[in-house]
Image 1 (tube, protein in one colour):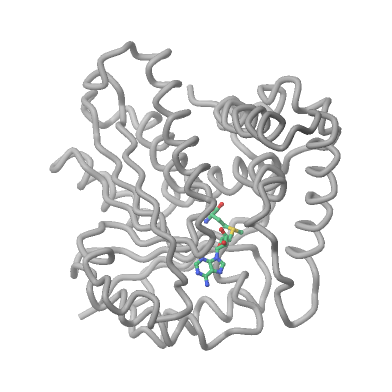
Image 2 (cartoon, rainbow, N blue to C red):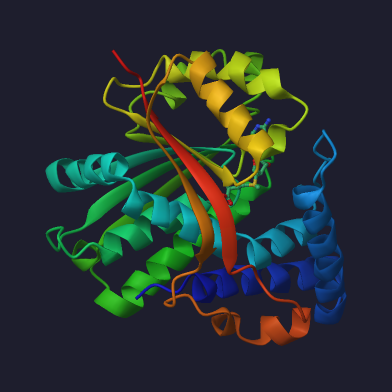
Length: 308
Ligand SMILES: C[S@@+](CC[C@H](N)C(=O)[O-])C[C@H]1O[C@@H](n2cnc3c(N)ncnc32)[C@H](O)[C@@H]1O
């Protein structure tokens, strides 16, 4: 079965080699920088101040740190929500079965975490007919440099399926097709002329994104109506984030302001990453970085529909 850490190891090693080559720095130097960014990210995510510190995702070392520590658990939480939430599960299952395609729009999708989650979910779902399901994942993020990781994760998933199911993609459980668009989702003026980006998706996901809008509570609620009004009536909207009262309240008020109907709202406390994902699969990186990726989470989710 898919091991997120194995795929992330490939993505990180490729980027790390490119950084060493292009910037003429050593692997040790990059790992040292990654360690510093791990601390910075820790501070940013768990800081109790009312504003979100500016996180330097534009810096390649920061992106490596994020890939190393946060993507596997973020994907696992997202996948677990797709397993536990009956409405989401049935909806995605229907799309996969009837159309052989699941269309996901990941707001603040950064490196493409949501693509990993959906492809893994499809691989696990033995009840689906063994025939390829296309996973079109439209990743919107304000940091253009994430495009490299989106491509890396997409390629990594393909590499894994190729090794597991052979060279013919028709035999794979899923065919990942990610596209990246640099968009500020808190600024409606930045996408006012791009309505085509937002229509025709089955699932709109904000995975660990609402918490990045700390102190800009109105920005999301003001900008997203333009997006969500373009969505199909059957589409579902999924807010997933860390379990804290402020973030939960914010996600709920965004959903209410958007006029969405909450179909499910749950907590995922003390979640431990599935055993198929082994951090040792990061290989040399684990020792060279000298830190551990996150393997547990306290999260919540709110699933919504457009309502009547
Ligand atoms: C914690 S990361 C989550 C990334 C991804 N969804 C995941 O689960 O791994 C938050 C992401 O939101 C993005 N983000 C923050 N503010 C944004 C904005 N105004 N517009 C678009 N993306 C934004 C960041 O660049 C970052 O990639």
